[in-house]
Length: 167
Image 1: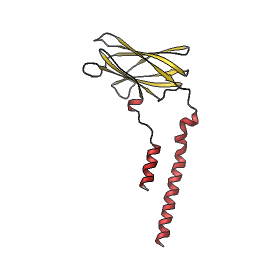
Image 2 (image 1 turned 60 degrees about the vertical axis):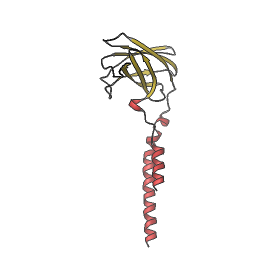
Image 3 (image 1 turned 90 degrees about the vertical axis):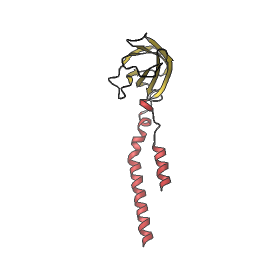
Image 4 (image 1 turned 180 degrees about the vertical axis):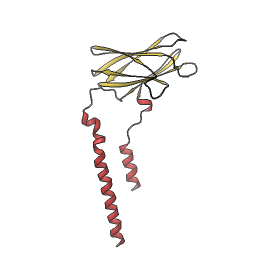
């Protein structure tokens, strides 16, 4: 029974993503070390949540008073968005939400301006997958009632087996 429960928990668990996403970029560009996260992983057409950790390259202390902006250039369109700490759950991260409407390769640039240092920009590329079908996105939630019924049926079967063995 314990093996069955352990197997069920292993199958039902989802991959854990630290601080809201997968790492897109980790780059040292003095005077900063910049780490960019994106969620969902893999990024898909639609809303993408972006987080940026900006650290001092000397001390690795987070830079908390920077102006952080994203610029995306993709198939036929360009998007700009500002990342702020005010909308972030983790106040060490600058976060923004961007809507990318076309699948394919997008180039992005992160501009960081801090009062005490020269502005920098780091860039990278992100591959945006096609939109996920709704059924594929929510199948886990749709299976929850059936999982509950299966657990109830297993409980009743074990209970009846125990009663039959006692008589």
